[in-house]
Image 1 (cartoon, one colour):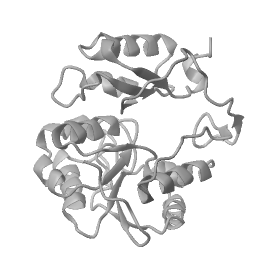
Image 2 (image 1 turned 120 degrees about the horizontal axis):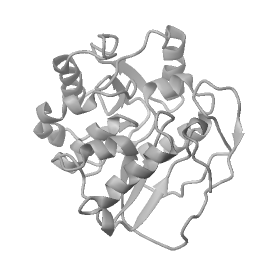
Image 3 (image 1 turned 90 degrees about the vertical axis):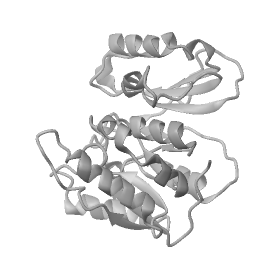
Image 4 (image 1 turned 180 degrees about the vertical axis):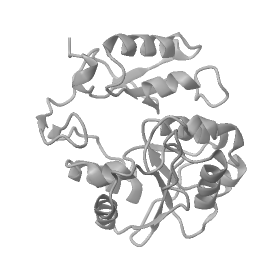
Length: 267
């Protein structure tokens, strides 16, 4: 089930199913994110609890569920973007009203810890979800034109399009150094076709064996990992996914660019 495409004037609801907005995500950065979505012709609204913070950098399960359910139930909302990732999205999975989501299919786009939420929604409802920028990314990233261009192609049109690498990338959202992108690296040549499933590698491993883990057999698995895991951890995480019952039946594997702190090199 593919959610309806967007059009100019549609509303994006920002919620915080994982971590809430951090204090350093200033009013100015929030306005930058609003302006960038405005370039796509979109309006922005916010969940009631996106700024609530406890010692886990989030808010209660009840408040997060309320914002999530409100976003899907509101007929004026056409797309949902989480504020940021974090480490708490899996607390919601058993309490989500998946029937409500199935009756109100909408674009859900996020990354990192949102892998768990997006995977659970896909498994329980069949709704296609999207791996893309968080709201904080839209307000903090210096390299945004490539991302906005792909969002426009993906969310506003039914036409197929080819993914091209960006000209530059940065090690983190806040770093000023622009790194020249060497394009895609082919590790094993070949052709494959399959459903695209994936997300943050550690978060995928957290889903293994649960009712919320998608079947990755016959799929193209895409994975990324951030600097908190080094190359040894990446090896272990990847092997865990490959050891799963459907891991041996993968048709292809796409690996995202690693941050330098991981020690992961091309070799």
